[in-house]
Length: 149
Image 1 (cartoon, rainbow, N blue to C red):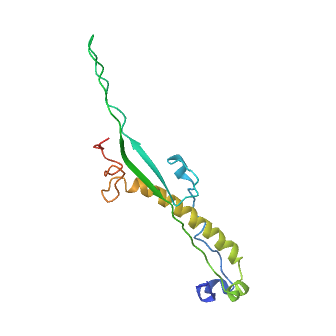
Image 2 (cartoon, rainbow, N blue to C red; image 1 turned 30 degrees about the horizontal axis):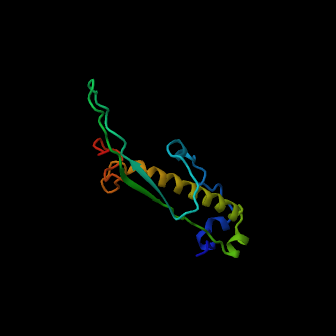
Image 3 (spheres, one colour; image 1 turned 135 degrees about the vertical axis):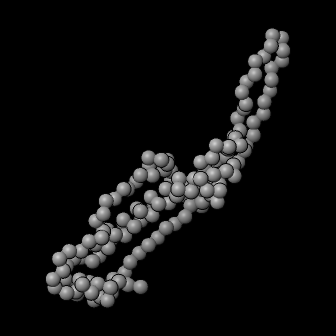
């Protein structure tokens, strides 16, 4: 559905003092402080955690060395997703607006919306870090003290 004149009534009349609501402070790319960013051309990526070894015991003189085993413990799969948003303006809304270039204003708003979406999606990893509804590969929430490995 296109943005039309009925949604921009005050911008069609003389006497408007100001338009506001799109100028608030931005906090873009805060996710780069927390996460590494990688590119991919696949539908998903997987990472496998290896268990490693336990602590090495003291070996007595003449005793045989102790052997340990390692294995894969869990696999994390990152499924890529596409986010998309657009807007449309009617020709009449563009022609009859008295104050500003609608397409320029809403293009900036759209860019802000996309950037905000990225930040919120990244923050959700931490926001849901205590929730058992969002377990990690080991079946535990991110912020737990009893990870099995």
